[in-house]
Amino acid sequence: MLHAVEGLVQELRAIGVPVSTTEHLDAVRALEHVDLGDRAQVRAALGASLVKTVEHQGAFDVVFDLFFSLEPRPSDGDDGDDGDGDGMDDKAPQGDPEATGGAGDGASHGSGDGSGDGSGDGGRLRALLLAALRRGDGATMRRIAGLVVDRHSGIEPGRPVAGTLYRTRVLRAMAADALVTDLAGEGDPADLGRRLAVEAHAARVEDFRREVEAQIRRRLVADRGAAAVARTVRRPLPEDVEFLQASARQVAELRSAIRPLARKLAARLAEKRRHRRRGTLDFRRTVRRSMSTGGVPAEPVFRHPRPAKPHLVVVADVSGSVSAFAAFTLQLAYALRTEFAAVRCFVFVDGVDEVTHVLAEADDIVTAMRRIEDSGGGVWLDGRSDYGHALESFHARYGGEIRSRSTVLVLGDARNNYHATRVEALAAIRRRAGHLYWLNPEPASAWDTGDSVIGAYAPLCDAVVECRTVRQLRTFVESLD
Image (cartoon, rainbow, N blue to C red; front, side, top):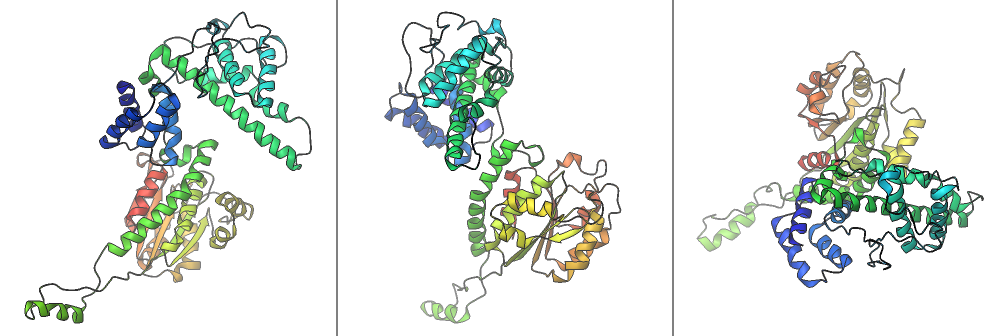
C-alpha cells in the first residue's frame, strides 16, 4: 500500500500536480483512519489529502486507477462487484446467449466481428448493452464492458502503448457513436422531454466509455505494471495544455478553468496592490508618536497607500492560427476588469476593431467570439494577418486615448505574411503607454522563423512573453503592476 501511495505521488508530481512532502505524509496518515479494503474510502482519503483544486481531480482519478487497480477476477461463479463500480469478473451477464464461451480470448480475436449491426457476437452484446443503459443498470454495463474489452480490444502483451487503439477497437465494435441515437429514438429535437432523455442517455453512454477505458487500463497494469502504464497514459493538466494544440475536449476544460482562475488572480492582484509599497509620510502622526521618545521621531508613520489602478488595453490577433489563444486571454482580461480602472479590448487581423461592448453583452466567450467572427471584426482587406497595417490603424484611431497609466497587451504570434512591419506605429504606442507587453503563444524556438517578425517588435516592448498555456498566462498576470 505504501509503495502504491509513493508511486501515486510521484506520478502526480510528474504531470504537474503540486504535492508537498507534508501532503504526502498526510495522505499516508489518512489511510490509518479508513478501511483499506474499501477502495472508495481509500480514494476519498488520498484525494482529500493530495488534490487541492477541482481542475486536478480528473488527473488524480486516472492515476489512482493505475496504482490502485483491481485486476479482473477469474470466472468462478462469484458475482464479484466491489461496490465502487470497478470490480469486474469475466462472467457473462444474465441473458447473454454466449455466456459459456469466448470471454477470455480477446487477444486472438483482435477487433472481432462486432460491427454493431445487430449480427454476431457484437450485435448481441450491443443489444444487451442498450437494455442495460435504458434501465440504468450499472452492474450489467460494467460486466459487458469487461466482456467486450476481452473480445474486441486485441491487447498485445508487453506493448508500450497508452491503450487508445484498444479503446477505439472496442467502441467501434459496439458502434458507440450511435448508442445515444439508438436509445433516444425518433422525436422532435425541440421537445423538452426528449432533450432531457437524450442528456440522460448521453451521460450513461459516457459512463460506459469511461468503464471501457478503466477496464483496458487494468489489463495494461496487470501486464506491464502501474508505473510503466502511467508514463504512456500521461496527459497534461488543463493549465499545461497548449492553446494552439488543444483538442475540442481540452478547449472545453480550459474554458471551465478560466473562471476560477480569474477570481483567484483578481484577489491576488488586489492584495498585491495594497501591500506592494508604503504610502507617503504622515508627519502629524509621526510627531505625535515621537512624544514617547522625547520628541525623537524614532518610528515614522506612513499613510495607507491608495495606488491608482492602471488602464488595461488588450489588442488581440484573432486570425485562425491564434484565435483560441486570443479568446482565452480576452476572457481572462475582461474577467479581471474590477482590478483595473478600465479595460478596453480590440481585435485585429489586417484591420482593427474595438470589441469591449461585445464582451460586456455576451453571456460567454464562445458567443462573443462567434459575434466577432460573424461581424468580420478585425478584417480590413483580405483577412490575412498584417500586423503592420493593424498596428498603424490602431494608433491612428485609438492612439490618442492611451495614457501613461495605460498597460497595453498585444496578443499574437507576429506572423506577418511577409507584409511590412511598420514598427514606427508600435513605437508611437510605446511612447504614450506606461507599459507595453507582447504575449506570444508560440514556443520561443519558433520566433523569427518563416514569416515571424517578433524580433522587429521586441525591442519596443517592456517584455515579450512566451504564453502557450494557462499556467504561463497566470504567471504573467500575477507579475503585472
